[in-house]
Length: 264
Image (cartoon, rainbow, N blue to C red; front, side, top):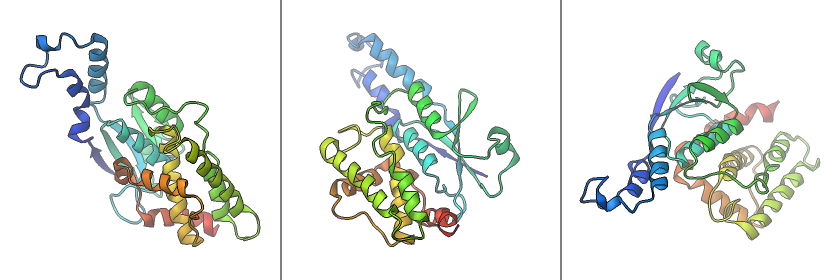
């Protein structure tokens, strides 16, 4: 097991403080700040203070390169959330082929991701991201309920196609149908699922699309067709986010991670 301490950039950490500073040439709490709304002051100061202590995150380690993050899309979803909220965290890389006893004591099922919040270890990316959103509401990443399921069937249909041994079983068409539906949604509502701003739904779907692109390209020689331009633009945009490039797995890990599904 190896541990990596991740800090948000200095500019991110200073966001709340900058909102509190009215005059760069005077002390933070001078009379120049008297017109600052007290509620906004308290909110910004609280968020900054709460995010100062690194969170503990257990994640799958790479199976191809030592001391590198592995290929779990659910873990990347959690890390994307922390990155987008500018929260520092300590990343503990776990060899899932040889799980240490201390890890099994906090995650009896031996699954990742698992995050320590308020001295309690929390599993499941859905639960983790919801808890993080409640505890650290700024910047907001919640997706409106009516949009939260957009694109949610893509991952399961991708897996069905990836595992398929029969070219005529309809699994490719099922995936194309889901991708086409998502492409049409983006055309009318994009560039992101919640419109102009990225949200938790994008941070959940993005890693899954990344795995789809790599695994289907390698095992099926398949790629997203040009007839879905809004989807292709969406993928390019999400994959190029600083938070995404910082947390994305190695291509080799994605390929090896899906090999048992393909060969099984």
